[in-house]
Length: 283
Ligand code: GPP
Ligand code: MG
Image (tube, rainbow, N blue to C red; front, side, top):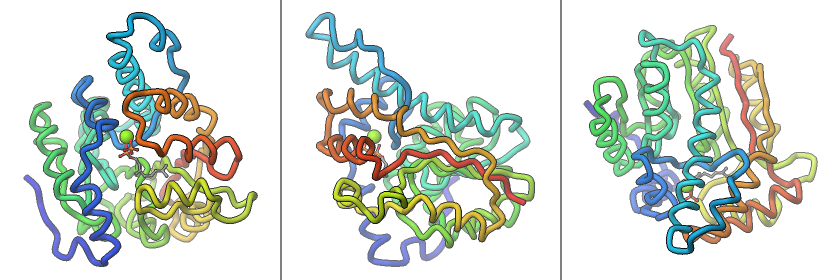
């Protein structure tokens, strides 16, 4: 059952973000999702198999699409690994759940209950349809709710993750809500793109990324300040930047490139931007 909390969209900015995701039907997401019925809204990690680019011309496009999807799935698996020990009795929250891919994979791995929240009604509807298709609608539920104010009970979750969604919100507000939702001893896992405090402000390439997605990439430091202020204590930080560059190189050469590839590659290569995973314990 989908539940709706009142006042989900509170600002013009939030309404514009919701409008983007309600309208989004990009082949880079839909065609990849069609590979195996798991729809992602995040990027990939790991080396790509170069053989996908050689071999029969007529099937090259399909090989590249499948390979991009495999790398995105590897990214989700890497995040899901951080919840090792989760069992069927546990409940996890997906903050900004998109078309539901990471949530459905997490339930498949641990048998746990997962709640996803999104401010896009279309994505919530799509994701709930996916959960039904996979026969897990009783365990994986997507809600039209705002991750800054979810309405869920205090301490209800063993863990929360955000997979590339924190660039849409104030981190102090977000981690305040997550700190409330996660039971002490629970965990928050964040994969994000952030800009580099060392190189100074927002580079041109990072500004292009912001413009493309109507988001506002935070500096790396902001994550640690906002966690420290909200009883979230980092235990693991992984710079995934070198691991995501191959994904972008392959994506740039694919038929589903959207034009943002050069901005990501420039930002990563010049060091103005990182692809980071932060795992924090709730104390
Ligand atoms: C991508 O989802 C994620 C975002 C829009 C947030 C921005 C992420 C950063 C790391 C800065 P997507 O899968 O919908 O994007 P695309 O359509 O480009 O594949
Ligand atoms: Mg995508």
